[in-house]
Image (cartoon, rainbow, N blue to C red; front, top):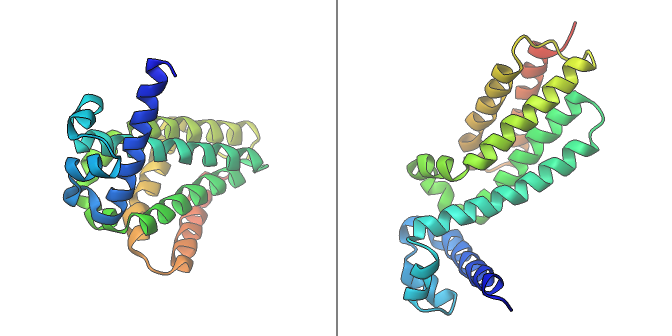
Length: 196
């Protein structure tokens, strides 16, 4: 095994161990000692790869963002109309987030407290989100399905609306509530951008 592969493998062991600890105890209560113990490495080894538990947490977020991007890309490709692609995008994103919130119950409690940090760690995902929404909107305009004056501004508004649903959906206990909330939001959105 070459040095880079060994380094990547050790980083993945640390990230996986930390992910489990964050899921059970949250970011605040998890320590570097806990992560070192769970990953069966010395604390100094952790500091060789990561400066802090926040850096490890950022990697966990980055890993989850990549998984979500894969799901989004797949489900968007399966949809056959621009409207269906936006539906697929929103439902996939929210279902993935809800699944994570059930797994990371303690992180749901820390969500608002860590919001700025999480958003910074998700920066690559936010760029992906804007590009995906812009692409879907442009396709909808070309197909005559959407009537949009400013594609980038509309994509930004959709992204903000989706983000605005994150916390309320995370704390909802019933999955039906999530489905009906998303459906209502999409109906309102499509009334505004669909061609007449």
